[in-house]
Image (cartoon, rainbow, N blue to C red; front, top):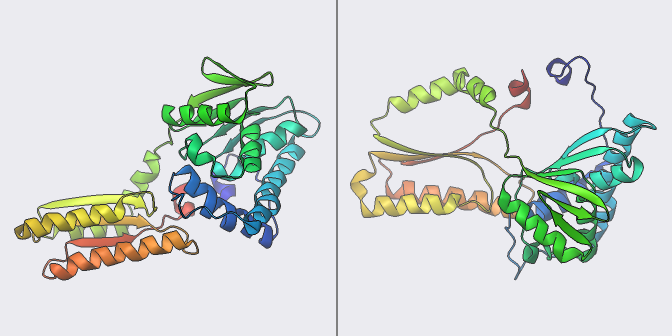
Length: 304
């Protein structure tokens, strides 16, 4: 699949950590902890709960996988330097590891996720915070989705060390300049056009046009706890309760990509979405105005 999609002069090298190491990296640190941290979805009264299991997973999972990526990257460069573009919260330690091995490299790390404010970031153990910030500030360029995230990152860095200076569009830490930029996640218009043309999509659209419904509300989301999916369903239910004559004239379509089922917060969210939609449809059984559908896009179909 990748061989057909990449230019001929590109190559692919896989990093394959042991299953147990990957489990600690992905299922203990990345999904339940870092994702919720960056999306400001923790409830400090109850979460996070970071104990021996999490510290072990940090050292033997997150750090180990990031170091494995860095070693593979450094092996590509050999004795020289390279230009590295790394990405997102899963690989935040890679810039630091690569900088240690290849000091003259040009490193750009980008985020598609938000960045938390200091009071939220401080919910992580101090040693983790130090490792993350030291690594990220070793990059030459850090890109965030918006100026809000840049300001939050600067605040976290300033709370971490007094050795920090700010310059135009960047930070200076121990003599190294890290430029900070805004890089919004791209919209893959060509892939969307491909999806619209799928026969399955066309049949679904035709089925919608056969309905007598006059107005359709649509949301397309990944089912995430920090989003207001359940509240939007409940708000739609309030609308129909106040104006029941609209039940046969409006509908609410939710196209949701499910999150990882092994994370309890995602399972609770999925259950609550189903309950909320079912409750409204039971009250207006003649029209079933809420339709919630799981969607999954094949990477292979998007690459071709």
